[in-house]
Image (tube, rainbow, N blue to C red; front, side, top):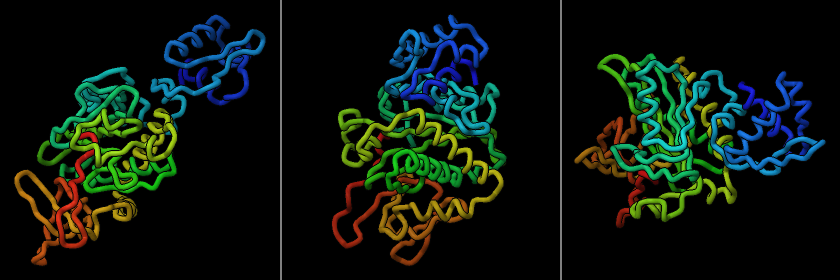
Amino acid sequence: MTTRERVLRALLDSPTEFVSGQSLAAELGISRPAIWRHMAALKGQGYELEAITGKGYRLPQRPDVLSKEEILCRLETESFGRALRVLAEVGSTNDEAKAWAMAGCPEGAVVAADTQTGGRGRRGRAWASPAGKGVYVSVVLRPRAAPAALGQLSLLMALATARAIRESTSLTVSTKWPNDVWVDGRKVAGILLEADADLEQVRSAVVGIGINLSLSAEDLPAQVRRTATSLNQAAGRPVPRAPLVCALLREMETVYGQFSSGHVARLLAECRALEVCLGRPVSVELGKQSLQGTAEEIAAGGELILRLASGETRAFMAGDVSLRPRETGAPESRHEPATE
């Protein structure tokens, strides 16, 4: 932890108490002017510090600041997020992370941004990423796995995202195959996994995660406004970004560790328990192909098993799934990705 991070941690640990500049300087082994410079830098990042001569410093309110210091001073992981870039603006966190991966960054390296100007979701759809209204994070992985395992990995990253959201908000969270996260029957987060691989081995994979925190209808494309929601709306309170990012990275590291060691049976059982498609009539679209049937199972490799009206089963590694009415009638509105 850097000195700046330790200064911030001391302030966060004493939300109602003043932190003595002199005591803090002695504890960190730096001068009082150095403490003042760190406090000034924190003010520049958006922290509204209260300073009283003879008492010290405190944070009367915790602003929703997404900074490297804010994340690292809370981080509880072994490797995920220890190499970290936090950007005010980026075209795409996935593109930034892929370039970093090609340059040799360690596994678990993370790119986060306040806003994306070219964010994207699955199948090249645009991903709305307005400043301060969401979590936009990409993580570099180097799995020792064949490309066929990427479907399972994507599914498990959705599980990790659902766990982090549930922990941070106490909301009831579900998932929709292959990797959407839902709250209150609407999409709140999505995952985009992109890999550098040959026919036999994955060299690197980048997992991009977008979570809607406070996007309004006006922030979203018209076609997805009825099928999207935000965490702040669902929770009835602001959900701060940095703690959510830290929870997300911790859950991703835990799930990825079990994936890497081959211990995924319980994780897949948890995925099935959260899945809204299973047992439901659905449509699955893959390219120009569209099939209707009942979503019967999620297989060990992450495939969705669809049972057709004929009784035949088909396995899908990817595709767009739409829930259909349980009874005969007109199809329900398609559940498009919330910001894709």
